Image (cartoon, rainbow, N blue to C red):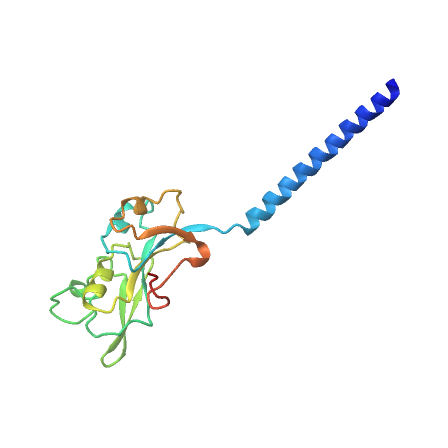
Length: 189
């Protein structure tokens, strides 16, 4: 009888050890699968909500800001007089520095054919100040807007820009839904 008790106790301990090992392996396997399938979340600016306040340039923890101007080419009118490129009241429609709205000369103007020009953004020079975006929205069709560049962004738990954004235009979204560009989707109601 004593031998049976020892045998059943040993079987119980072995069974418990096997069960514990199985649970541990299952948990590790489940965690591995969930971490591989869980989607990454990133910070995103809604171009329809953004008011071009300029805080993206000053409130980002990165210097220069991880926010850059992007151009929705499909919306652009390729205007000779671009409100995002020229300062209001410019003396001449030339590429001279005194005529350019961008303080860092991040926008270049390339002649296509009379009277059309293409405008390109140099991300390395752009500081995310939104002056060009505000000009394009005020005097153009809004083809320039701001976006957070995820290859530059630290993806902070609490984005300093989002915290101070007066229009609440910056939200966390799934990485697969990021980089929404005006003209490529419609605003949801």
